[in-house]
Image (cartoon, rainbow, N blue to C red; front, side, top):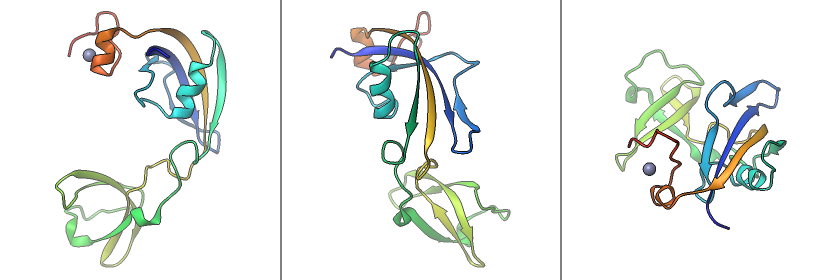
Length: 157
Ligand SMILES: [Zn+2]
């Protein structure tokens, strides 16, 4: 199948029904197919929708962000952190032994150390997505080469 540009609005709901994220009230989302811009389950659903139609997809951990992997939790000495006001749930920014900047979430705070969770923030969660497909068109050669969508008049990069 040739590369397409899919334009859509979405709303993602948490398990308790609260809104996790939405494009409503903003510009719709534009993705190129085949580039992994969104979860495969969402791309596959969008590709099989008619323009103008709506669909709800339930994204389980298997289809979405995976399960919580306890191997991805790591303990750090409190001395590593310059911030004295550490709290569970806080996002921290650390430098890996390879020198990469990595983000983690504080999972637990002990007297001398802090347990940091490096799982995807949505790991283990089931989300419900409302999708509304607005447009489908063929991608241009330039868009395919760049790996992103060019909108009218916004091709400044
Ligand atoms: Zn470009």
